[in-house]
Image 1 (cartoon, rainbow, N blue to C red):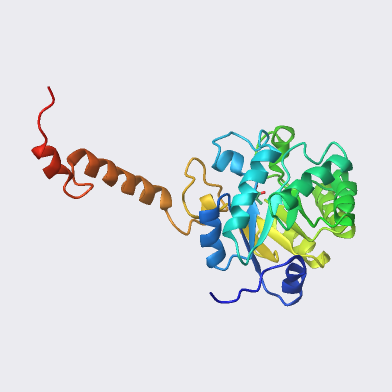
Image 2 (cartoon, rainbow, N blue to C red; image 1 turned 90 degrees about the vertical axis):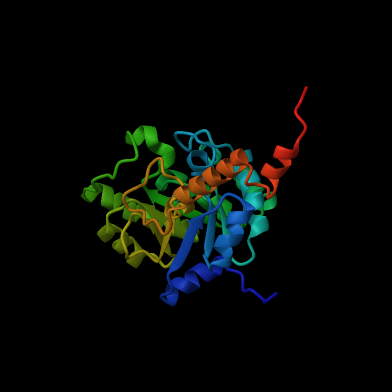
Length: 276
Ligand code: KIV
């Protein structure tokens, strides 16, 4: 086995300083985590997108802390090099900083994550500071915040006027000042993402936010073409695995029905004595 140099929290800022772009994908289980890790993905995010992608829910709101802990354990077991980051689900960090510390602590202590990610700007800055103060690295998440889907009225791309742009720049600066190790920018106009990226010393990681961020993140099931219920317009599908899986399963079903699997099944069946 060759030695691997694990990606750690300071690696992210180092990569930004050196102009190296950061790749991040979501992962929810050990097998997929091992494949993505082997491919050299820098950060594996146990996103609360597991609600929609894995659990078949309509939104991420019902995802529980126990569910994220459970999936984070699996991803950590499958990972050797990548930095594992776990999402803090809805209502696990908004109530107060003490609860946030306890909940984030479980993601590190039980799940084996190296950092947590949480959504929001100014309102969550005191929580971010508190988590960082007790040694829990935090990744921020601005722009489209899926946990606020009802307040936003859907997952639509928002038109960013001057006031909203100013707010986003201020939120990003406040997150960095509070100690965030990186900031995800989801569905933000590319020019605004470029401004945030230039303003911060910690990396920005974009999703649907154009090419100027320090890194890019996608939901792995989207980029692999596995989740085909809805494909966001900014996704590039690097494979079409939904079709591959369906075709393979269909062939298996046909082979079992026709006695082609396992080998000799048809022969054995033909030689069977009739039931009385
Ligand atoms: O939950 C998730 O998968 C995410 C990414 C889309 C950034 O937050």
